[in-house]
Image 1 (cartoon, helix red, strand yellow):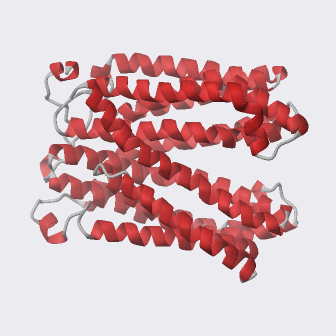
Image 2 (cartoon, one colour):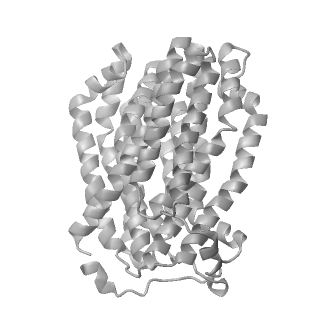
Image 3 (cartoon, helix red, strand yellow):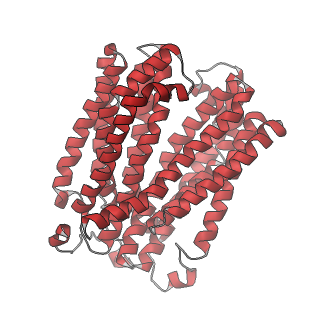
Length: 463
């Protein structure tokens, strides 16, 4: 494939993913708009619960991301048995992970709320516990939707997950005022609306899969000599675990950074929180390119074409351009962005300064995330997870040391750490022959765990 074809494919895959990710943020905003009418305690309860949900989403990435890569690779190879094996592995992991999180979360709902809200017996604790009582068992729906999305994306269909997210948000938009205010359910109504909206999206997704667009009939699967369910689950877990770890480490690092910023002052904490939400608009664009690069890389490897460098170059160009655009927008529009989020006074000033200093970090982050998609798609994500862990640890240490410089010091710590992470990943990318051994999901038993290295000629990368 030529460079323009790689770039076109990345854009085609990425823009629906971006719309889907933005849609997820929109759901949280919809809930907050209606819950805000119930007072500060209700807002605090839902905000805490949403953060927990985001962190738990990283757990199911083991199944969703692993399924995406394996299905894309099997699709490239034209291996129907491997496709079915990857799908089975994703659902098997969902069946193992979901009861632990859903049941365990429900049983621990009050201690969890107390821990996150700093103890006490206030209204926020009671409301958060009530929200968790519905949202944590309902996490099973979110986890299942993530697996459905993973299957569809692996088949190269990123538009259907975008539409499913729109179904969920549309349902929440209708149900929120009805349940929160109309039925007087308050915070519990917000949780019920969210679960029902996601359930509607999941039902639509399962219908798509049942129609055979991304799955196979049991009779056809039986003819292919599929391996054991346990082997399918282990293969998916091996593929998805590093990606899940990468996400969880970054989320945990972001939460820990709040404690470092708190050493500077209350206004800075508020500014950091608001600016971080604004930053999501840019970072989600980077992650959409990452998912597109992972899908495209896995598909090409499955077809026997090792074009990781070619895909990586185009992903870098695309994501880097997005990062530079974000830098310029933040430099010129930072004060207006803070005002759009309702901040005023010293909080708005601190947030504008933070956003203007954040540009170099965003450009570096864009490059790191883009190359990460190539590593994910080629089965070399364990190396990426190690770089992320070391980089996040370094970032926190630098932020603590530079916090005396205020929020610009925090930005300097973030950019310095990300520069080192980019250098490490760039070095591995330039040595693509040692990025890691990729596996093709085999069709039959004895080949189930045999390492596979693409046999395509190196000249493919020059096309």
